[in-house]
Image 1 (cartoon, one colour):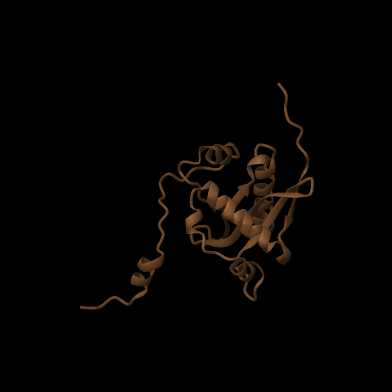
Image 2 (cartoon, rainbow, N blue to C red):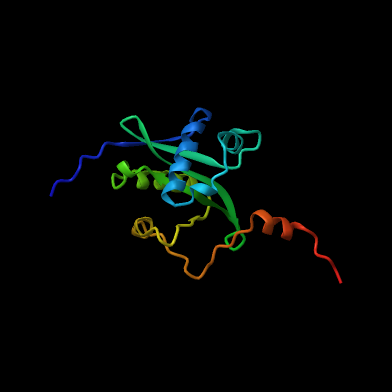
Length: 169
């Protein structure tokens, strides 16, 4: 069997100069996830979130032969049960041509290293239920599917309604 030669993957922290690239990669991820019409984030939004006065997320970029091929974006969360911070992986994306070459593993490894270096107790993320390649990849690394949990989201009008004080009786 012919196994394609794999070039070493380099992973580095994103810089402010990477914001346009990150925005492009996020849009590619949204296309893959069939959610492109929901993307409203702009490069300015990313700039502020990553490098503004109060950064709330971090990103890393993977390159092969000097070409950017993927990214991961993550942020801290907190577990009241563990009594410590954890890491939430918001996005992990590898361009199709670079898949099955160790790029996703390299990105996840760097994110896991970050969590451990900071003394954080766990990593969590979500995957779309139809994305079987990603689910197999994550489970192959030892990640456990949390079938007993359901993800909920409030946004738009629903978020506005819930934010209104309840009218008392």
